[in-house]
Image (cartoon, rainbow, N blue to C red):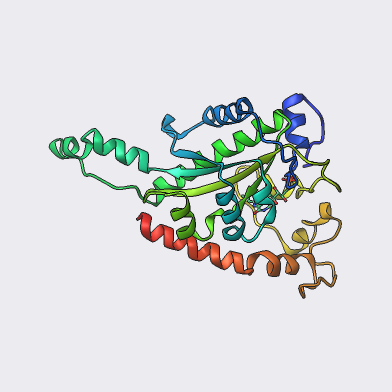
Length: 264
Ligand SMILES: Cc1cc2nc3c(=O)[nH]c(=O)nc-3n(C[C@H](O)[C@H](O)[C@H](O)COP(=O)(O)O)c2cc1C
């Protein structure tokens, strides 16, 4: 299966040509543009129409500067004219349930009360991420670039305090927005071929022979001998050292575990 490059319509063109943008024109976004992005995010599909997320507009420069430190020292975060934090949010519904006297009524009806569980968290994360990606596409349609900052799930205690996040919330996605300062240099980031990603009816694991071809769109076989500065002898080893076993991955694990203790 080939990943299609065919231009079919303006929406598919937009998706095909989107790239993560990390260098921004410092001009602020117009309020109208921000509202259009926010509105599009809120029109995204949402589980049970519950909108299990909140969106925080990060406007203070001091907050942006702190995010540089707490999100693995990515300096460009401080230069983004507009930043949105998408928060998985069950707190609003728990507050609503309480204010509406739901537990009391459930007790009268003999229905067992419950608190948000890991399942509710995953559902809220889905909701928040779907809204976030809708914001990305909306921004792109306005000529505004974006970049996710995955490191927002690290340093949970710092981000909780920075944004006053209550118990049943979790920062799902941080998105930097801004008009591209320049056309991104170099080629588009390739993707693995569709045959490794799209399965028919059931999941299939790949043989080492097949896995060797995984990195061909990146210009090499997965296990081809190369010497990387971090000590890896092939592109996969280099990735394992640079990403999977990196300090930020350990911090991500610690942070999410701490948050889960708090949530459940
Ligand atoms: C969940 C997620 C987390 C990401 N985190 C970061 C990040 O912390 N810093 C960064 O510069 N880019 C980040 N990115 C952007 C990816 O690096 C980028 O999407 C990928 O390299 C493909 O490039 P493209 O978006 O230009 O196609 C993230 C993307 C996603 C979806």
